[in-house]
Length: 450
Image (cartoon, rainbow, N blue to C red; front, side, top):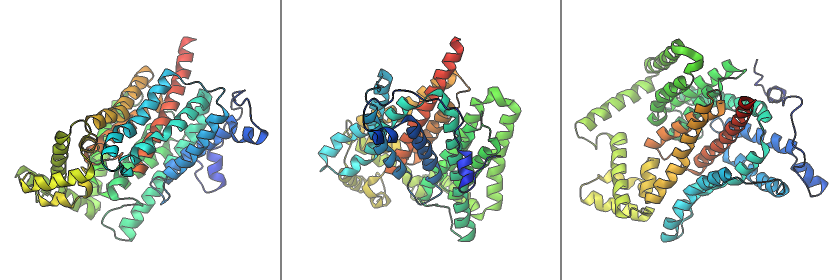
């Protein structure tokens, strides 16, 4: 049984396997104290606990998980300095570093043009901060480390999803809140709980703790539904279908049909048992009806997004290469309102925020922003797909592919990588899963060549 308990139970669940391999000569210089802090054994343990804490804290507590990543960043810099004599950077590493820097680099022109406001650079800077962490992980991890890292990841996902469900149920069923917000905005809780749910579901393959991961996946899905935010809810059936198809070699047609049936039952059960879900569905139907009738103003949420996307498109066309600054976008929106292109409602949205990563990247970033988006969203997905195709048993490549596909969907209706915490979480999980997937691939290729 998976020992997810307070104190010693968690430690028992995360206990490293006996006889774990070590790499000699990782530190060639430095005093004894420095040598002890940055030994491979210590670095492995710190990274395992960091992974656990990022996942456990993300949506279940008010503690921001990017604080953990900030501490890990400082440690990784020290680790790289201490291990500089054995660190070699490959061409592949340079590609990864470039992709992590793209978001930041794409925002520098508009930052320089618009009074050097730090908000332009903040999300990209948080993504760029993962560069030293990636280099540390790439230097550190070997295939033999994957089982212990899996245990820490599974424990973090299970605790994070179950904890988030407990908070969501308390808010909606005890406090009587209309929707669950956790310790975030409801829309952020929606797609983060969805991302956590499908991390749990993706880890089921090859795990010794399948029941716990299934429970975590269901908890994340229910939390997403209780948020009543449609961005995450509508992504769930698509991601479930993708996950089932990726595992069709193991589960067969009956299990795929059972999974789809389970999702339908969750939808029907939520509608039948939760009045707030009923109201949200009815509201959505009314919005679709208003949009079909051309009554955009009456469809406040969906119609509002269409107007924001229209305004963002005009901002892109006004300066295609780098887009417009926030003040310029607000001024443009006022002109568009006077021309009858959009309604006055849009003027109340701060900075003309487009509520879509794609439109936001185009409006403030232009062509450079869109190229950067391809680099940090599309390219990772293609590479994870390639690793999965080479070895369908590469759990990490599969999890990374589903994770990336999820954010591609969330970004349709929200700038899901635009906030500092979200950008950090997205980049951290990309780096973590990439290094683990490549370590698995190295092991697979070694077995295949024997």
